[in-house]
Image (tube, rainbow, N blue to C red; front, side, top):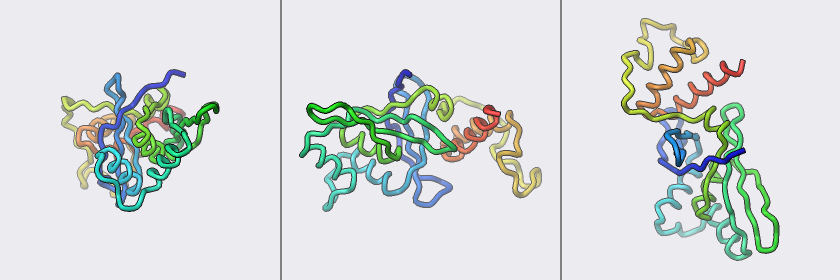
Length: 197
């Protein structure tokens, strides 16, 4: 399968979860973005590496991997986000040392990205992941349907499963416009569930 290269676009705080962040990965030769919800520790680790600021007094876990790699001649050639299963992304990183064959190691996506930033290696995904979970940012979208229904119009506990597919697609566009990537991910997952049936 053909790999699609991604680039880190942004790291934003989550509006709906405490201590959670949204990592946005851009398709390098396209308009799609992959929003991935990650924890505070991993977000901090990625941000510190991206900023190229002074390292913390004590090394973070991902910095330890880099030190071990430097000492023992281990390099990471690439990170691949290979699967999306029940709303969770799965990734691997590929590492190699002199005279040895390349080895694929399973990792949490946030950890794999934190290592990719440190080892300065590319991040990839497959078309099936990007087509299932990718969103397209389009600032020119104009839609006069409100993202949320008014309180008087809807039952108190209306969930995503209660909306029509057409309404969900409208809600997805609104979530992307307002840069609420976490909500966009939840809506996208509901749309994908229906398409799989």
